[in-house]
Every structure is written in structure tokens, then in C-alpha cells.
Image (tube, rainbow, N blue to C red):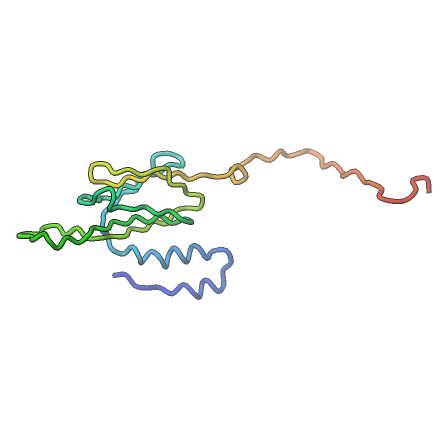
Length: 153
């Protein structure tokens, strides 16, 4: 059983954690489990999402990536000319949302054997990568500079 939690008391007393509370609140948007999907870690910074999209053509699927969000849409056009005698699988439109880590990059997507495969990579700018800081045994004093005046005085 899923209940909606109110995170506003935490938001009032925290600084810099806004995105975490937004993630928790938005988690209820993906409460349904259709279509099923897998998330696979391929390497240190490489991931793959595989979503089951059997029954959807390439032009019926769209992928949108913006600011830490990935959205996969499947829209099946209504065909009123078809008369079903039995409809065992109702292929309906869907929206599946994924929250991506900061600096997440979509490398590519393909349709493969009924799966929409999306490859992702987490990138880090050079400034954010860990670096070793040299430790000096003795701190040097900064050279003092005389701005104005007479040195002889």
C-alpha cells in the first residue's frame, strides 16, 4: 500500500537537499509497473535501460531527456476499423519516467527484439574528479610587495 508522504517539514529545515525531496515525491508518479523494464550496470559509469515495448513500432515511441529526467513515451494510434474477436493484450499508451543522476548523458537508443534499449553514461567534468593534493612540509610565506612609498625612508 502506497501512501503520500508530506516532506515539507524536512524542506523547511534543510539546505541543499531539495532535489532529494523532489525525487521522493515524484516516485509516486511511477507507481504502476507497466511496461516492465530492466536497469543494467555495464561498467563504472555505463548503464542500460531495457523497456518491454512489444507491439509498438519505432515511430510510436519517443524518448525525451532533459535536466536529470528521462521520459519514454509509447503512443498507439486508435484504429476504429479493426473489430477484435478476442483481445488478450491491450496495447495502450504509456509514459515511463526515470530520474537520472547529475551529469547523466544518454548515449543512444535502439529498438531490439521488442525492447527499447537506452544506453546511458555518467560523466564527470575534470574539476569534479578526485585529485590528489600535494602536502608540503613547510608553508612558504607570500612575498610582501611594497605598493607605494620610498624604500629608503
